[in-house]
Image (cartoon, rainbow, N blue to C red):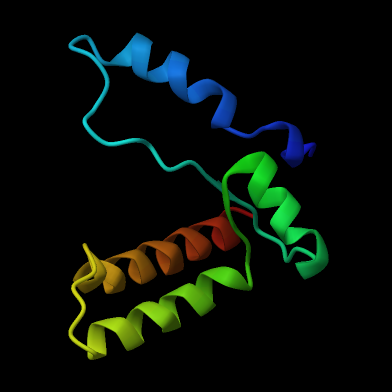
Length: 101
């Protein structure tokens, strides 16, 4: 609930200052908001401006398909070769959740 009020954007400065003893990392964090439902395309740009990058249930598969095209074209994408591990984890998690219900 209230997912639009839970962006990490406002917390990034404090997080790096608190958790990294020798200063912030060399690169900036890229905050993501991941929601398990579809979002209205007409409001999507505003969500990204307010919350940072947003992934929802329709964008994740689209991004994976785009990544596959890039990999097939010879572009290296970090950890893409581990995608099957993620799929296996999601399937296992879903199965455990179903068994617990």
